[in-house]
Length: 242
Image: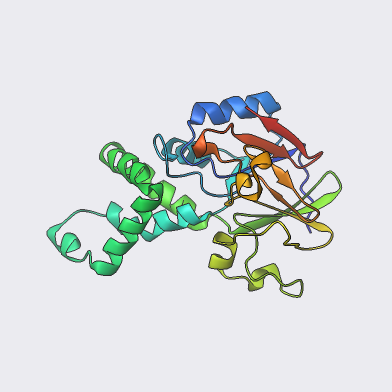
């Protein structure tokens, strides 16, 4: 793996519409600086407040932060057709399949994001275009080294995991929609860091806290359910909570 030559690497995940000011407050508490790097492991959007649109706008301007695609961003991209020019022909083209995509997305908390993007379309359609381009370019995973350890960063873990499979052999759905069990083990010598599954799913004692096992770390602390957002510093595995 290529070693990242920066001061510290931080990860968080599943912010789901967290107010941008709270993310900035969390980064300030961690002492995050210009030489550090932040990875958001997907699902910055949906569920609450402005649906994460302000975070996406902020990410467009950050040279030292990267969003890894989550299943909620993927659902948003599946509804990208909503942000084209609204004409009678386009409305007629909204067939059952497309309407099904929109309904599924809205039922999963995308209503607030779509509402915020519609408002942004009226004032700055070019910004919406930049956001969509950014999401299209967002990677499904990253590999980094920090603190003498190697890490695989991905949104949901690895579905249908097999140690003989290369990471490039996994389909997007296998990286976006995995639901690891507490007994699942991934690569030896590489720590897999993901979100997607709120840690409380593994037991009430893990509510609102980062969960570590021998081969993986889950950093989805359940932000939209009233829990404090958290950062994990990969260099020393320190956990920072707001």
